[in-house]
Image 1 (spheres, each protein chain N blue to C red):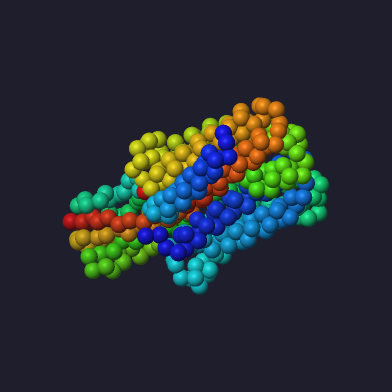
Image 2: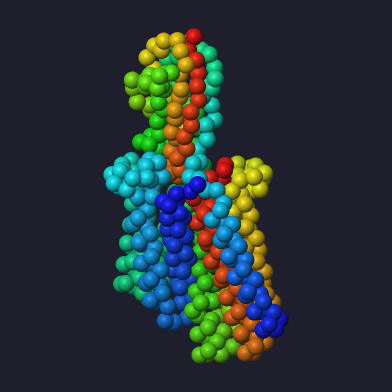
Length: 285
Length: 127
């Protein structure tokens, strides 16, 4: 049975991935003309930094197998000084500091934050199962693309569904919503293509080319549920595109779009939860 | 699509969310990843006293947290030196003194570079 620390590790991964996606989503929404999202970005970055600070403890627990708090904390210096994960933690920490400084000092230059978020995704890709294939390998590149595409899709939809679209519907009307929605839909379509291609490669690599692991292991079952949810989200996204954005803007379709985006956001929030579980699960069990 | 069917869709989404969350919470989770590929001496073999035990794993290892211990039939450690990870980062070896005949157990812990820990044991006999 998984222990409390295992659940805490998964929860922290989900919070970190979710806040990362929201930070990306806020940047994209800002680039598409949405205003007033700075405080959401501040909260997302605060969560991201908080999750990052406790990561060495989870690494020490995972590597040593120790469950005692004091003993595990005592191993943190060893993890940080003599393991690959420790080196990557320092690299990611520098990126997070740059991200926070850019957020505070240069809020009107989102490109700096976007580059920093990409670098953070790269350090995360280098710390996953894909690292077994070596640095700068195709597996690591696919993992990076997968993390970035997930963050773009989930982040853009979550921020749009929860904050931007309700405001645009109520304050600016269908025309402004359609203009925003078309940019959102186009970006999400590219992200979905990258997600599908990289996801196929990453999953196939993690299964060690054994498709049977999909239904014989807990990891595979979680992956199947995640794929199902990704399919639902993609279906809802296509409904937004073809039943709303491809037709003339009006208030009924605006309401329909808002509700479809809410349902898509729910599915993607669950995808992030399952991704957190998969990142901490063993493909062999 | 009218508002009623949208409400039904939202209700189904929430129901699915609850179901999937429950499924996720009951799914087995583990944090081991690197697998044993081969070992010398092999499991359950009978050999003349080996100079060392060497195990090859499927992925790169973290030397600080990976180790091999060989214990005799009474559970007493038989190796005097610490195990070491080879230059290929996937092979771990522990040198052994001349072992008297008897049953020995190899206990290994492998921590992969993605931080996941796996462990196992196997036995061999010295004739």
